[in-house]
Image (cartoon, rainbow, N blue to C red; front, side, top):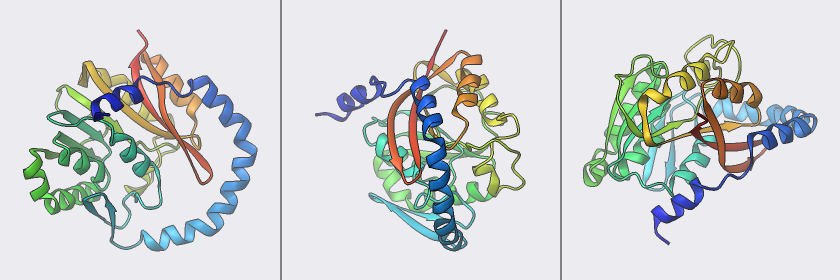
Length: 258
């Protein structure tokens, strides 16, 4: 079966409604709380030690460097889950935006598949990390005809107005004000300012055929994030889900509710 056909099948299948996901989250909350306490006791020290130095992470033919303090795909499964999902997306000659690109692994992957990618981040260290990985895969990018443009931006704030075919977002999921650049990978503001900006402005960067995908965990306040989307006339349609350790991960396709 051709990639494009598989992609259409995946993108048109709604696995759960948001109402079902939120209800499931509420029912699982007591058990998840115990699981997370146990997991953090043993898992967090290992993650802190490993991510305190520069490491590498290999996905297919991409060997990404990950600098200390940058969101690490080896331990935080959302990156790997999103990459596996994107296997079925046709990136050839597509104009792609990744908001909050971190190490740049997803952006490089899309570019190696032939996309013209704009990779943004608010963290200067992340921008440096993206540049390292783009340079390391220059030969693959040249062979594919893909490219990565690195752009500092807080969501859309510093991004020149333009239209993208695909927008990819692996966002900071927790409510709270980040105290430093490292925490920007996790905290989206006291009033979920990241999502306020995302859903307010994303339509300006999309056309009628654009696809926007956001990956979230049931470890976050899905009800509040969904409410922000609805306030801005967007619907979060679940297109894929996966259980990883003490959380469920969901990929949402963002579609107009007008």
